[in-house]
Amino acid sequence: MAVPAIGVRRLRVVAYTGTADDRPGTVIQDRAVAASPRGKAGGVGPGEIGNFIVTAHRTTHGRPFGQVPELKNGDHVLVTANGRVYDYLINRTMTISFRKPAELAQQNAAVPGRPGERPTQAMITLSTCATPEDHAAGNYWKDALGNPEHRINKIGVLVATRPAA
Image (cartoon, rainbow, N blue to C red):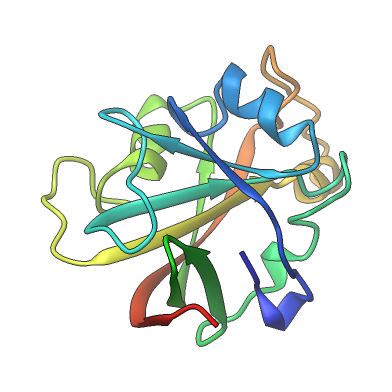
């Protein structure tokens, strides 16, 4: 994965069966790579119709998503897989709370932010912690895995595909 606007290059993304920010995903992220949950309760693969979810640490373990909150609408995310480059365009931001099951469902939904809606296009969600923002607001709550209350999600849509060089 590459996110040119924030200097991310060649970030390895490891797929696993699960949901965003669960124990298996956190173990993957702790190796300074990104995790991509797949399956019924997770997301889809790159270029597929639905929500391709990618999570990574922002403040620890190499900080691969350290600058993700700085992404702006119109920034590109490039994912190389299966001999293709998938070009996603960021078009919105969604912040969710780990304390609210309905908001967690929005993050993991096939259409980000709209649980139960049937997807019609390929989308991406880049998700990382809001630790600095939570701490600045005096919120030091953490779940059992050390995740802070809030997640910042940058959401985009697939705009182009091309053969990998």
